[in-house]
Length: 518
View 1 (cartoon, helix red, strand yellow):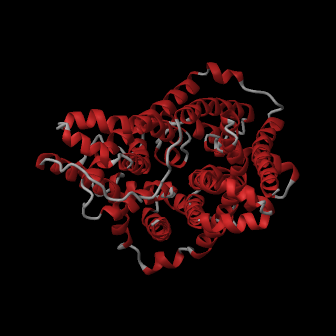
View 2 (cartoon, one colour):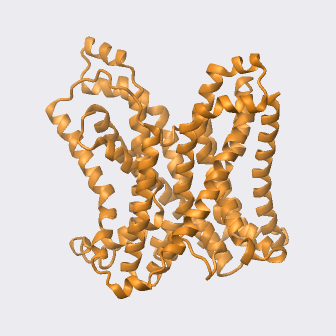
View 3 (cartoon, one colour):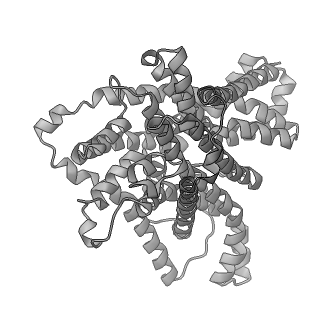
């Protein structure tokens, strides 16, 4: 009985997520009079935008995967590396870091007046494809490192003992042990990063540098914000959804990745690398440290230029409270919805109904590939006729953020819930527990994972720019939007200060998340 009632609520929650998406598209369609702009399909400029979107996403994903492999191998083969635990925490911080903090750090480091710009030649420019690739690589390389490292950690000690008995050389170890372990994860990680970069907004908006470096997400924003060309925006949204959805099918076809899992593997037998190999491993590890920490440290020198007059003009408390308030509510709702929608998914898995499980997981995670800009603007244009946005703007920011965060919360909770089902599901059914008793047993089992999912969602919600940019007004402002407004008016020193303070808040939350997982 407890199971059935929870599953009914789960189906209702899943229906709610789908209905909100349909509502957003209805809002766009009603303004566009349900017309699509078919000229988009033959427009040379749109073709250029589409090709650039695919190009930058493919290059970003390829760079992240290729650069992550040697670092992940270094972490695996040298378990006693200095600062290894801190490095893994830094990887998590970089992946969930609000994009505008990174953009500000890159501008301070490699922008027009950056610290390293004089050494890069007169032809260097941060804006354009090279800046986009740098930013995307910084944001997604840590995820790939953690994913590959955890995959290597799953290699059993018996395999290495057998390899030692058979006297495998380095090439044979890579080909016969590492490659079979990693190949199932390579495509999944690549496609996941591709989808994230394909749907990227803040990085492209900040570092695109002009029409030559525009993606579909930014084109949708421009069509809505500046031209108010709803048919064109709707057509571009469907095009983006079709492409991102196709790649999402690849993820679900070849398996899902363990997103941001903790390093919980116990030490096991490992072959001792040769001195040359150990040196190369250390080199790749320390280079990764430099690459990830440099844009963050670049924020510090600007702080020295802050004087009392500039500091007195900053209004940090209200934007910070706004970001925290919106993030806390959205994170709580996302974790709640993830718990609910996983109930019918777990039922399908227990009954070995793989197609139904795949369909339900697709519906629960479809906001991962749905353009957040389209959801926001669809609800925005509907609200213009029916609601007072001065009152309801914050509600819609929370609502859309919740939708976007549900896939991340789902991926955090799913493995632990599946483990509970495998070990205790039959026992709970035999005991015929009521709903309250069932949840009193489940919640302690899930406590750490709930906290981890909540903190992860809070970090991601606080860094939102795309959704807030639609519903924001002059009376309220979040920290990322404050950074964007300072950077857009070339007040880099103020932007660096706010970014550094925001970075400290995110670092504290990441430290909490790592403590929870260990």
